Image 1 (cartoon, rainbow, N blue to C red):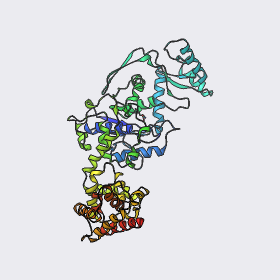
Image 2 (cartoon, rainbow, N blue to C red):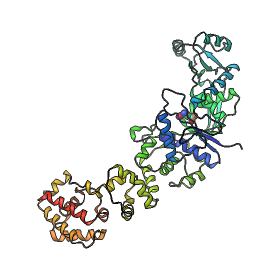
Image 3 (cartoon, rainbow, N blue to C red):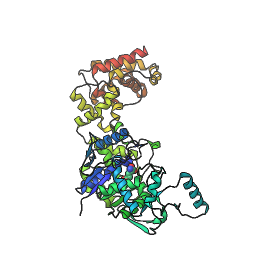
Image 4 (cartoon, rainbow, N blue to C red):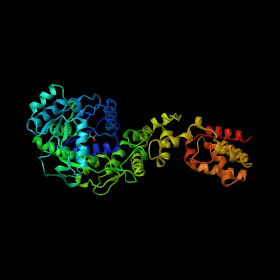
Length: 489
Ligand code: GLU
């Protein structure tokens, strides 16, 4: 069997969408599973929309996901890496021109001089005649020599692929969808090169897939209609067609195509929101593929070992944000505490939190907070009440502080904390002190708990105290109690 070579071929016209990331992942897994090569090709012939910035963003996102490619732009320098470059289509124009010349010389394509107005009129006529046909160009049977003369005289022409004589069904044995049949008359003569000489996607894609020796094209289902054109071009060039597998769409929970109306769809947004790359890969793999034993949580290595196209389903996969979070939580909680602290640190810093530098405290805090963390940004909510400089008494506390019973509770709280022998409190210390305050003040229920909560976190609702108190020290708790007392005096 010849070498497995697959590619991910993004157009650098924006961010890397999770759908693109999933296509990249499936190609990566397929290559790794089969000892093949994973190629990154940049489809930037749409020069108005393609940007270097978008290319850099996509490269950064793929690197973050760890989907390292064997050939393509170098991940740091973006210089070509591999024997089949250039890997950017804008640098391969010569290749497309040569392929187009071959099709022209073989009579499989022609220069078409129809103007936009003529094309519109011809389309209207086809419609008015009520048949499903296609525009027939009067230039279809012109000679290349005549056309070149007209072009050198300043006329503009596109190069069109001839379809009318094909008259057959193209049968695609799709590796994921099974047999797909395309009658050739589904489409009319289509453009290969625009009048400015720029090639179109379908043409570049075929030339590159052939010249880069791509064995399998795994891409999103939305490209299925392009595949007919591509099959026609492969055949006309006399090139062996790669295998194709079209991966189902990713859907929103209302079963529409995934869109940003429902939340983030850009890969880097998930990074900024505190998702782990291993969790993203794990979840994206499950959007269309399943483990033979229905395992849901697994590292990349296991996905590589188990991946096969037989287990990729053709039905649309719903992007379930709750499940993604859950998958992230499983990966996050399985990490050593020190790694978790390193991962959350940049988020805590970014939120401007001032927290103890003591390593033991940091490990203890992760141990306590871990069960409450699903994504890294959850740490910000969890750690904020621990930063003394962020302590304030929020307006929602006013009502409870105005109760005539609150002062006695706060005083008792302050005294009991002060009387505690150690500098820190464990959960049992906290519960015991709460009981002492109850006895001393004669208050219970919310009359007891609200003032204590306010004295600790500045508000009567929110974070769970018994997990916070063990991470605070006596002087901090006392200072907070004084601030609360000052409000009732
Ligand atoms: N540039 C195309 C895209 O971004 C690639 C399609 C393909 O994989 O053939 O959708």
